[in-house]
Image (cartoon, rainbow, N blue to C red; front, side, top):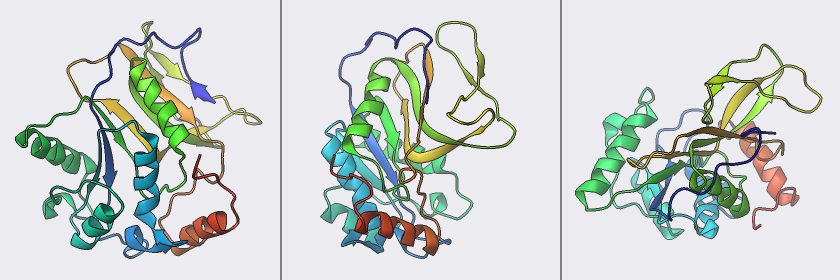
Length: 239
């Protein structure tokens, strides 16, 4: 289910602005070595995310942030932009992604390019359709400050807060067949405004119910599950 306004979405407040698809792909993955370039049913894992972002048609640039030359070359071969590499200090095991994002924004600004919206698309979440991306981008266009994808788990609910023009209030996830649950954010989509044209609306949380879309590849078992889904046509990547 989606955490939205009680009545309807806010009106479209802003014209079409420049949008960046930010795909983070370190070379030093630990859970599954070199996972971003591992062959997943005929093409590298990262290619599935690049192709969905390009097919979506909603981004001015589909950018891969990596410190690794092989990942950069593979990404370029599938149509992504990799005009510069991520510095090593932003690619360590303990590095925060925020550092890599800030570095990328500064590099683009130095090259005379700036963006108004950014969407982080993790290559470890290969199951997302162009239609899904277009729908989530439309929520940013509608005026939400950020849009995130999440699923829930049983247990004590974690509290998040939403502001939609009324007073800030707890966001309580309500899910079918579940009275209690916690939000777990997924790497399918994390979009937000980065320009001074900040909307006044809050966060839109899109609930992921499809088991395939919840796949987050960190281990060999995760990878084999993704392979099984693709080989058995259990997810419509092309839509």
